[in-house]
Length: 122
Image: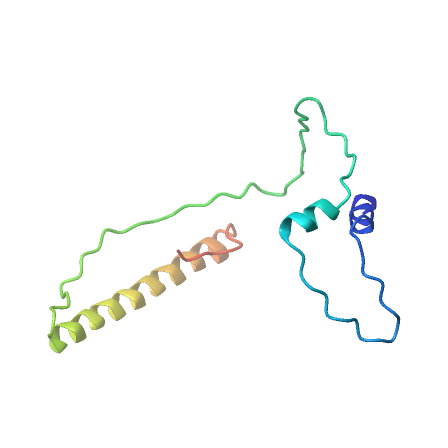
């Protein structure tokens, strides 16, 4: 916080009379704004600083991804409404199937084995 206060304190301010609407200020060039700032004298370490942080965790958290190679039977053909409807039906069936598998997997892991706390769909 002291560095932040020092930084904000080094930015020039236009004097405004309290209670009055400030007059429109013409925007200065980028170079003029940079030149008007006062640089801070912040010493940086001469070499890398390494700190080991140990956090006590209840259980390690890992992730597993399950992929199924799936090929749709119906693919939309250009200009064919029937093929688009057939592909949409296949995609909807597949999405319902995936949701059912996810739900069952979560039930087994969370309730029967007590191991799962969160579930992310990719």
